[in-house]
Length: 309
Image (tube, helix red, strand yellow):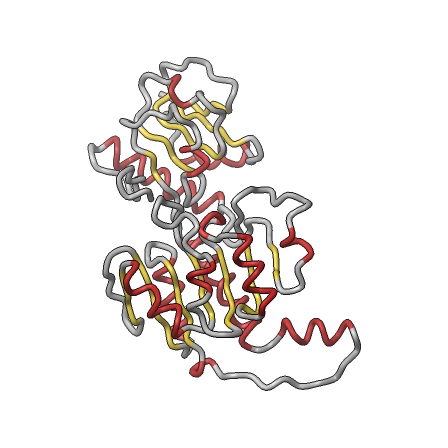
């Protein structure tokens, strides 16, 4: 029995040590060095080579080393009868929650304005609205979005959340479906997107949706880059409709050097760093799911082909 590690930029030895201490009966292979394709039962991967995942006849599960599975699904030949298990562990949820909070406070307390004032040596205190005067809208109330919404609510923000189907979260106004999206956009001053990329969310945040937002509102995207129409966002920023955007994810990554986001004064860019994979906590979750599968139980959370997340 063997586990195949397929992540070109990952620390293979760290992962090998973590797995060897928890699953000593499994051989740990590092792609492309595979002793036998017939022994591989589990694959841990980020950006696997196109066409590679279909090569292993006794494969039981594919583990994404991250919450998203786009990097796996870009392969048109990925086996559809093998469960793809997403990675949502407590460390990543914590980090993404803190990231969203950082940028929300950054905008709420006018730090984006103070940074510009410092460059021109201007001493001028800016008026600001307290947290209870801000409504934060969280798009996506899944394993990531729900803890983020709860964090903002616990800190005194008014919070509204939106999802495909109706959810119930304490202290959060929960809205659902495209028909209720305008209600959320119209009442929030800070929008945090944690949406997955599906046929329904691709390009969802476009000129039509930006027009519904409050004048001078802010956008934080830590979900998927293609949820935003880049051209429309730039137009909304140029007009002042949106006062600032903190973007961690993009339709094309790395973000091309010629992309206008780089030079835009109202855009803050981070390189897909909101919730980096924590090797140790990720291994704990993956091992737990492997043990479930070996007991005949279902791993969690599994990619749903029908829902697109």
